[in-house]
Length: 159
Image (tube, rainbow, N blue to C red; front, top):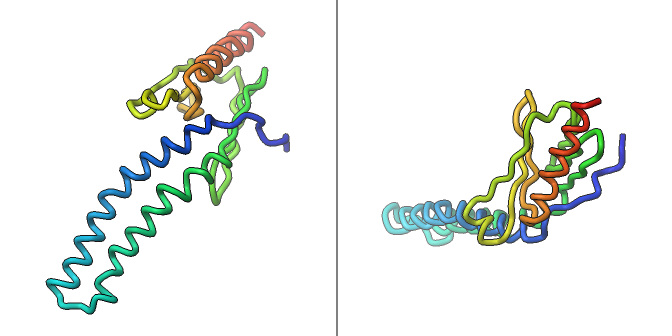
């Protein structure tokens, strides 16, 4: 098997994933607080048991906001080669995707509101099998990656 891809996502990806993790954790924290309230005030459970739903929600929030983003960033890699695009990602189960340039049909960039705020973009390239993406690149880098994939795709079509 080939060596792992050389390029990493922009380090600001960790901040974006922390922000989205915090937004995902908010309803979980609210549900945990409500569960603790219901156990303690409504069901009359001892405080040591009533605090468990909130404690569980806090643990999950810490994972989403502080633990997972740096791990995801460390594991996500990509490389644009003349004949293929190499993607590697995953935490527990690593996924390695090799997309031949000859299969790429078109390529786009996308920027959500939080990405715009942080100066990030996602490159999306489509094949007959569906879309693939390289997320959280600096906007200038994303434009260069998009243009490079488009250029290599045209060269693959001419061969």
